[in-house]
Image (tube, rainbow, N blue to C red):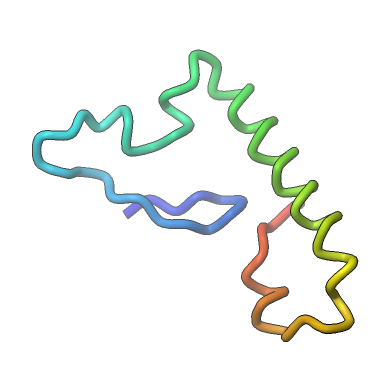
Length: 69
């Protein structure tokens, strides 16, 4: 399994009959750096949006969000 470093979701490395390149979304982009930038941008948007719900959000839900470093 491969884990996305920002969102933490896990993807298989191999699936019979499926090309490996499409199992990792980063590898489907012509420029992996562009994917990284958009992935980070999406994570920042997620975090910015979550701020409005922080007072009513359980700790484990907050902890399940993306890691933006």
